[in-house]
Amino acid sequence: MITYPAPKFYALPNGTFWARVARNGSTSIEWAIKTVFHPEIPATNPSDRTLPLWRWQIPWTLSPAGNVYMLVRDPVDRFLSACYYYRIPADIVDNVIASLNGSGPFATRWQQTREFLPQSTWVFPGLTYHYYDFANGPQPLANAVGLGVLLQLNKSSQPKIILTDAQTGAVQTYYAADVTLYNANKSAGPITPPPLGSALSDDPGFQI
Image (tube, rainbow, N blue to C red):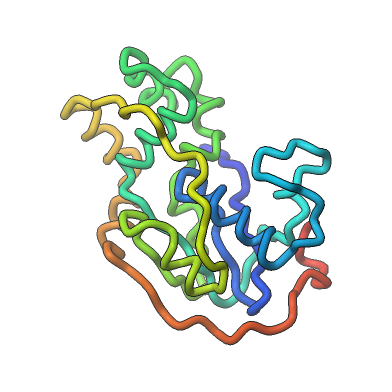
């Protein structure tokens, strides 16, 4: 059985949560959450490395409740974005795919890397999810939770690698649950969120 790193959710002031799915506009959204809802956190730009890191000072939890906002992305496109992030060249993509499936030379590393973590890992039973299609950009989700105009951060500046048909099929097979999730929520959003209320940072379930 593969053990993944625990998925992280940020608490929003309206009593809802945002699923921080890596490579799904996460840095842009979390910086906006810090700027709009937590200006007291002493960081002047997203690259600020002052300890403790600003993103770890935003209220977050491993156990969300109720309503969760989440961007969903085409799994192949997200895989390519993760490869770009780690500067993985085309000639070792097969090794990465094999490792994700547990048979490659770096299985432990890639299986437990958040950028390759299946999006479906953030989908918990018993919660109400409000999905937004990443293909439409993260701004509709940001508008719904009151974040205003997002900065575009961590945008790929170089062309992504091109997968063969066999590699594309292997990625889709590995991320089969994500393919189902994405296909069910293409062009999703926007919706009307609950009214903004008091922050929930005093809840003992949240980590600062």
